Length: 195
Image (cartoon, rainbow, N blue to C red; front, side, top):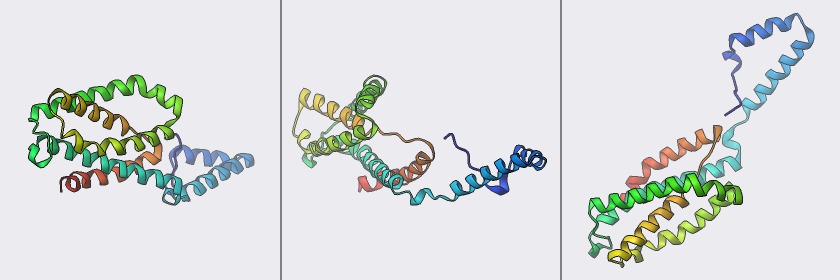
């Protein structure tokens, strides 16, 4: 965040000093008045009424809910018995899948993501990731029908892809609002997903 907004009641000593200097110079007074008016007009604008911003925050919150629900469900699903549609994995095997996907995400973000983001742009990357995540998540019931090395390979690939496709970021004040909403949805995600 590069723009700093201040309330009129919370002026720093530098602002007061500038105001005193401006009293002796009419042109400086005009400049400071214009700056103060600019601050008031921008501070009165509500981020909550900015629909493009709020729509992206809503999408970000839905992704966070979905991501936290997946994180909660994946471990439970992986250790559940096969008769209930799970994988009958041990906690060590679940840990291995999560370690492989975490390491792969690190490699992807450091090597391939910057190239893809420059090529397609951040919005298109998010759109493509969102669209590809739908069939990927719908394939999980069929993954449970696999066994042996095929199961290990497919579940690791699916987990890596899931983490790669959910990569998003925001900046500045929008990020602050998004993080607040995201935290709320992340708090609801494990309980909702577990239920």
